[in-house]
Length: 151
Image (cartoon, rainbow, N blue to C red):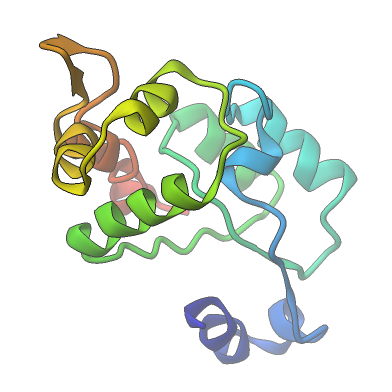
């Protein structure tokens, strides 16, 4: 796994425990019902549950306040971007395997009958001609601010 390879290549202080916190994902650190990750939820997690030197991963869209909160706590950030096609197929695969997402776009996705239409929904965010979910490009761009951040 890429995260394990990254952890093993970090200086000892970041990888001395030989693990990372796999539980820190977008759905875990935010409001589980609404899938909302905020600078405050990340700051709270880092302050109360992460131990020094721990490698933590997450699906965290760029936010200048989030970046500042991590920087204030001395948390280095590594951005890993996957091939966009892999990202799209991974999202489709995840939504196929999980039934606990109580948001309208997910429920609309599940109502779509064929795989091609489901992928088109994830790409466009449109349901019956109405924009109900950000399109794939918009969702992907939300992470790119980390590229310019000096953390």
